[in-house]
Image 1 (cartoon, rainbow over the protein chains, first blue to last red):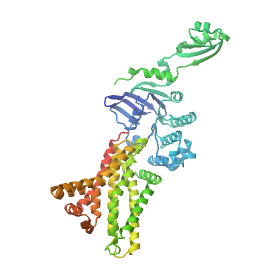
Image 2 (image 1 turned 90 degrees about the vertical axis):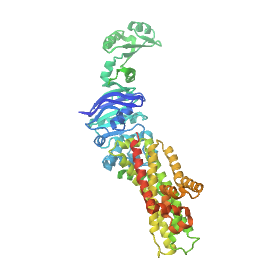
Image 3 (image 1 turned 180 degrees about the vertical axis):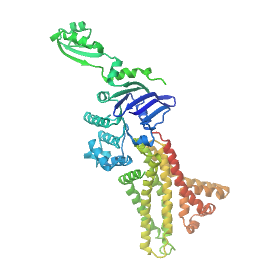
Image 4 (image 1 turned 60 degrees about the vertical axis):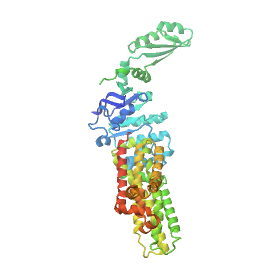
Length: 301
Length: 270
C-alpha cells in the first residue's frame, strides 16, 4: 500500500517555481532518498507533505488524509533541518514534552532516548549538547507514536561517521516496522546502500525516481577500470586496450556495462604483466550529476 | 494545550523569569509601602490607599514591561530555532500553542503581582493592625494589573509573530512599551496645553486617555480623593468616560491583543 501519493505538486513563490509538477509515491516500509542541490526544492516538498506549506497546484495524499489535517499529523513525524531545541530544557524534559503531545508515555520517551544513545546525557540541558546529540533528540522525537510516514530533512548533516551509521540503523529498523521513510540528503554515498529508491530534484523538477540499479542502467554511464602495470609494459598495454596511460604505472579505461566481461577477458590475457585491477561502477555522485544536468527531462504538467 | 503551558512554565522557571519578576515586584511593593506611609504617619483613613496609589504609579510602568519581556520571544524564538514548524507537525493547533503560552505567562505574572501585593497587605496589617482596613483597593489593583499585563502579553505575541527574529521583536517591544506608558501621556499633555481647555480637552481627550490601557488602569486605581488633589486634568476625564469606560477599555484590550496575535500567528509561514 502506498503511504504517500504526490500528484503533480507545484509551488510558486511570486514568479519563481520552486517546485514544478512533482509526482512521487512511496510504499509502506520503504526508504526513499530525496537528493538535490541546495534550493532544488527538497525542503519545500517535505513541508508540503507536512501541510506546513500550501500547494499552488496538484494534490498530496498521506494514507488517504490531507496533509496537515489532524489525522495526517497523528501518523506523520518530522525531523527538521537544523532544529535547535530550547537550550534551557534537559533532553529528557524536551522529549517528554513531545511524547505528551503525541499521547505517548514518559516511559516511551525515556526508551527512545536510550535507543538513540542519549541516556547518559538526558538530564543535562540541551544547551550543553553537541550538534550530534541535538540531532539525536530530533531523531528520537521523530520515532514517537510509531509513525507511518517519517520525513527526515538532512538528518545526518554534521554527524560523524559512526553516528551516521547508527542513524541509518535506526532508520532501517523504522522501515522494517512498516514506516515509510523519506530522507533528504547531500551525503550521497551513505544513502547509496541504504535506500530502496532514489528521487533526484533539480531546480524544482523531479529528474529521476527509481531504484539505484535501474537509475544506473538507464543513465548508462561507463564503468571505470583502474589497471596497474609494470612501468616497462605500461604504454604497450594502454594502447592495446585503448585506455589512457597515467604516470607510467597506471591505466584508466572506460567501458559500457555490456562490454565489461569482454574487456575483463582481454585484460586477463595479459597475465602477470598486470599487477592489479579496480573496477568502479559509476558512483552516485556521477549518477547524480548526470541526472541533475538533465534539466528539461522532468514531467510536464 | 496544557502541555504547552507546562513546558513554558518550566522554561520560565529555568530562565529565572519567575524569580526575577517576583523579586522585582516584591522589592518595589515593600519599599513603596514602607516609604509611602512615612509622610502621612498614622492619620490616614485607610493606610492601604497610600500604598496602592504609589504601587499603581509603579505598576503602570512595570507590569507592561514584564508582560512584554515574557512574550516577545514566544513565537519569534521558536521560529528562529525551527521548533515552531516542528510543533505544527504535532496534532496541535496554532490557537492552542498561543493560548498555552499565554496561560503560562499569565500565571507567572499573577504569581509575581500576587506575591508583591500580599507583602503590601502583610506590612499594612503589621504596622496598623488589621482593624478598619479595607482590602478592596488591593484586590482591585491585583485584577486590573493582571488585565494590564495580559494586554501586553498579547501585544508581545503579536509583535513576536510578525517578525522573524527575537532581537527585532525585543526592540519593537521596548518601543511599544515606551510609546504606551510614557510618550502617549506626554503627547496628550502637550496637546492639552496647546488646546488650552477647548474642544479637544473636553471631548476628545478623555476618550483618548481611557483608550490607552495603561491610563485606564491608572484611572481605575487612583482613589477619588487623591484624584482631585493630584490630577485635576484626569478628574475631568474620569467623569466623561466613567468607570464603565475604563473597565471596558482595560478588559477589552487583552481580548483584542490576543485575537490579533492569533491572526498574526495564523499568517506565519514556517
